[in-house]
Amino acid sequence: MLAPRKMKHKKWNRGRSRSRIKETRGTKLVFGSFGLQALEAKWLKASQIESARKVISKYAKKGGKMWIRVFPDKPVTQKPPEVTMGSGKGAVDHYVFPVKPGRVLFEVDGVAKEIAKAALKQAGHKMPFKTRIIEKEQS
Image (cartoon, rainbow, N blue to C red):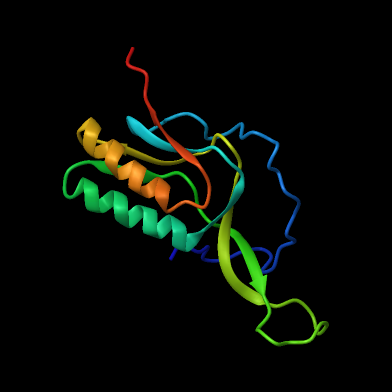
């Protein structure tokens, strides 16, 4: 799974929801010809990124290249079940990436248009929010 090697602070505050704010960075295709773009705001777990990566690499086989444009660096803590309130904050359980609408999550290049769209469609089913497939404008 994806997780940071070292961090300045082990446990972060949760922060507030940024569901109405659109993403300003990472909204355009940079590396590939096809991409998967988020349309809603949610936390994307490292396990969800990994499952989408597996699906895309299965479709691409040996040809083509894939770029993952997000990295889960926000720690999420959780206390064990049936533990009473108090006695501090829980241990880090997993890492997430807070996604805002408009962020490009994955990019694909070097494969046929049909294969790229099928791979990204399957990867979109692994996401906890609505996504769309975008294509680079030919100039």
